[in-house]
Structures are given as structure tokens and as C-alpha cells.
Image 1 (cartoon, rainbow, N blue to C red):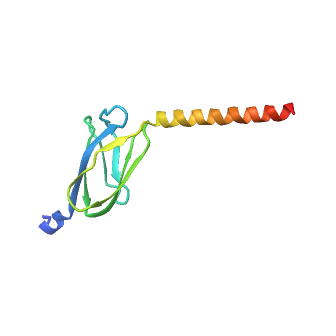
Image 2 (cartoon, one colour):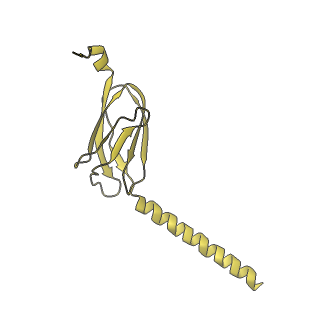
Image 3 (cartoon, rainbow, N blue to C red):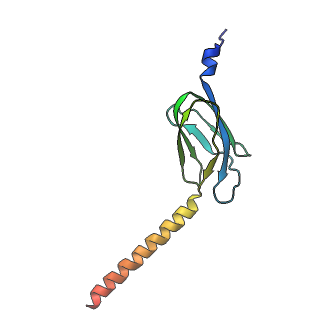
Amino acid sequence: MFVLSPATEAQNITVSGFVTDLNNGDFLESVNVFESVSTIGTLSDKHGFYKLMLKKGEAKILATHNGYSDLSKEIMLKNDTTINLRMTPVIILKGKQKLEEQAQHINLQETVQHKKRR
């Protein structure tokens, strides 16, 4: 029979919280939330809730989900901790990047055409 001593149990820290969309506040289901060194992880439930049991000390919490930018938070775990994660949709970032790329392409075309006229 295996029994945890109080000293062993005291070293475990609960990290929990909710994962939401940064823009509209909707709860995000099935977000992969994990600690990068230990690789201990879980998926958020249909209410966006997640819960991890980690060791005291430094930790890097990562959250990944299709359609959203990866999120990373470095923390020092001393006590049970609540960390609510707000994830940014990738669509916004890609849209902005695409507009910037199109603007650069237009500027490049104008420069090339201007040089041909000389």
C-alpha cells in the first residue's frame, strides 16, 4: 500500500482558472493547458475551466488552441494559484499581417513602375 506523507502532499500546488477569448469573453473548450518542463497538462472543459497539480517552484504555463495564438506565462508557485488565460484569435493577427504584406507588395510595385518610367 502506498501512502503519501503530509510533507509530500504539501509540495503539490493547484493551478486553476478559466480560458476565454480575448475579444468576446467566450469560454474556450478543449484548450491544451500544460506546464512546459514537467509536461503535466489538461484540457479546459466546456466552461473553459482547467486545473493542474504542479510542484512548488518556477513554472511556465502554456496554452494552445486551434485558431488562437499560443499563450505563455512564467510564474513562481508557492501557494494554490488562480490564473485566468485570455487567448487572442489568430484571425486578427493574420488579417493584420496580410494587410501589411499587401501594402508592402503595392509599395514594391509602385517603386518598380516608377523606376521603369525614368
